[in-house]
Image (cartoon, rainbow, N blue to C red; front, top):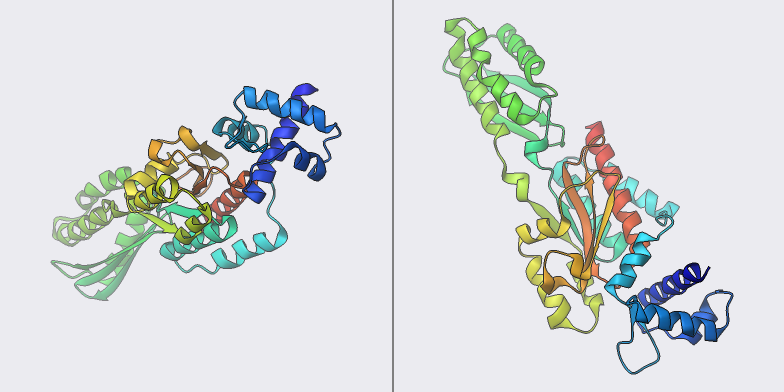
Length: 340
């Protein structure tokens, strides 16, 4: 009973501090929250929480603020992630379902996350090496020139115009298209490349030249890893809400936002789309960002995470709301990628 009550007091302190940005006193807790105990009992619980390192007194005032340890306990004991309201769900669906390609999906996701959480949003492009082939299209442009279109499970589309050393008629192009899809659809890119390399050997010697050139273009498109460390950032203006402490909090964040490798490390490895990870203050990989927290999750078709998205902001953030927004946006993006 005592532990449950202390947890209720801690939860109230976190909620009030996030809301008011001011240290929380026992009187305001009793006034704002129906804790069902006397002010003296609340003061005793606050003293115990402070002694255990969950809250601290920043100044000589009577107010207390949560520590990283306090936020950690608060997040770990969340009985459920606060669901988004109907308007927020509609906003996500409307904005994301209007996307026209992968770049548009990523840009819209960043904008959405920043708006929903009022934090800095980060979205990693899907990692190409984890992708599978969804479809290959071969479109004749002239007798000796074709357009090759590679569509991946990430929603990424690669196009190459290929000049052939000898012409291919429409019947042979159709046969080649069929064999390509039969050979590599559903394969991871590394396996698909290996399968493609031996494909020209299935053809008669006089046809191998055009097939080999086309296969080489496809393999090159699959080995283009430019997206593997690409991230998009949005909502930088939200850093203005940090308030005091520019040098301690905001400057390191601004510097970090310029380094994609740093941002990827902040987000962490892509986990399952069903798991939301919260790293608070000193739990992160960079001590100079110890006044910030990161809420992230993976996204991708099915249960496989191809990349990570999340938000970065002050440790004094609305964790339930941020976790709900990150999870919801990831699920919508995953569904879009799954549907192609």
